[in-house]
Length: 383
Image (tube, rainbow, N blue to C red; front, side, top):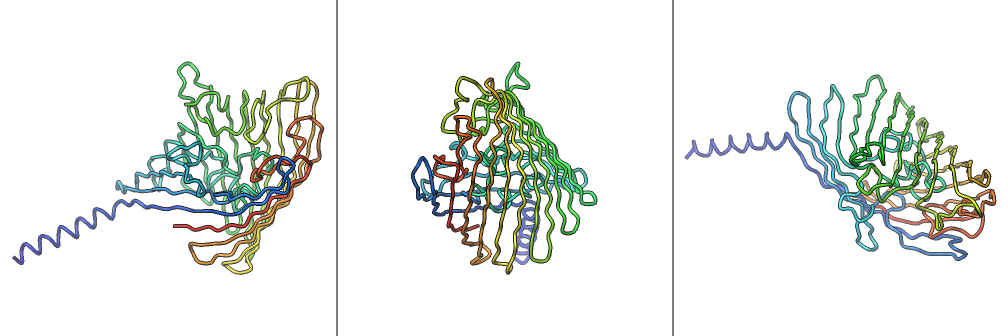
């Protein structure tokens, strides 16, 4: 009998050691709040909205130790709307992220599947902007033109992240078109360099898209932000952490050629009597996050955006000024409450299109004037 108990104990110890080599975790975020828009199609609007700042989601992530410093990893992450219970990201089951890969301390990490592009993931410049850090939709740049608010992900993607050497991390991505005879039709590729040293974090990113949204099986499908023959996004940003404050600067440049669509436009028509040849955006942002206490902080951001719009009938140069504030209080390690407000003013170029009016990405609709304010009061719970 003693021998039997000894054998069973040994088996349990061995079994526990084997299970310790792999792990699977369930996690999630619920962000729910009340929004007010000052002018949406010439009316004020109150809305219950989910995930405007920290996208509501649940997910599974796991690792398996393969030995020799190698691990198998995966993540399946689903976005959802708290108010309706529907899946987000075009009703995809795992629309936020879905990937599997291998990780090595010595050689880096390679992942395969639906993923964030390299300009807005943890190492990209977007993570150092207000919308990519704490501001979300309410602080997003006009039309989220540089995707720092994560409007789209990349399907069919292979991503490589290097080990960190003396504070420097490099990554690259390629998203396949999956189209026979159309290798470059709706493909994406990009790269990022990230540097961290003490309180300094800096990043430079480049992203190239060809015919985004052209095919449903391509790299960017129904969650496309812009449709055009070609698009490139360039972004650089840096933040510095002092004792109680995080100060950041960011710049991004976006080119969209032969544009036919933007996800935030109510009408895709071009200027009267003409069609669009190119849209070009330059975004200049300064942001700050001040911590009164570890559980209480205030974020502030100012963005100046200038666009160069080229059409068959001429060129136009609208400009946007946007100021946003976020006040956050942590009730616990898992639960927070916050309040946000953003004011946007557009200096119209009189194109006769949606470019002439203010429109915050979190708003209930496009303004009928050059001004718009959006306010949000919300709660976040993490698990």
